[in-house]
Image (cartoon, rainbow, N blue to C red; front, top):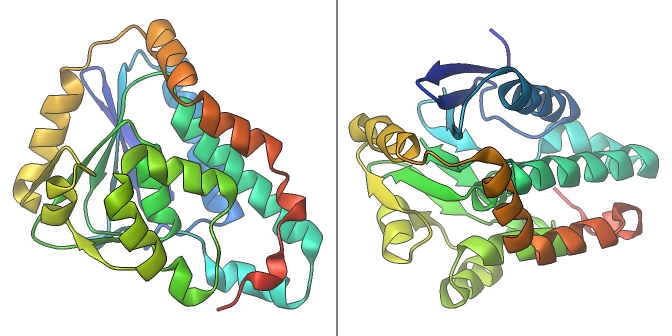
Length: 237
């Protein structure tokens, strides 16, 4: 089974992450980008839904088992290139030229929660799973672009608590604080997500232009901050 695969439900592309905890490493991100390209250029899909095959986890962010040996060896070229790759991936999601909906089928932690914020809309299961930014507790500071990304999706009063304290938030709490459109039991999640996504019949060109304008300030930060200047020495396991 490949790390990612997709199918079409009418004009909704359903991308399924099949890589266990779906952690970010070069191979996973490279394949994700290729699938996004294929959906955009080889299908007539006009909405994208992303879910996980894991029964408990949507995405747990950066693959520290892969990354930390390079950090500990002070291999800054590998770390820098990976930072660029993560930025490029999140940037691609932010500007993807069709409505994007995360079906948060389990835990969304760290980079996985940041990724969720890059979608236009989010639905989340209410019976299991937390949304959480644990970076403050594990010694991995957000990059400037990541701060801008989460501000897009989370009200400031709630984001301060999540960002500074690393608190875990349930699906019901995410709905209460307007982080997700709706939280519902797992057996209803995909039906509701697909019904919503299927109603978003938008022109790709116009929709893409709307996203570019809405997210222009975030993209400016991503493009202006060179990951090479980030202090990788602050990363710790």
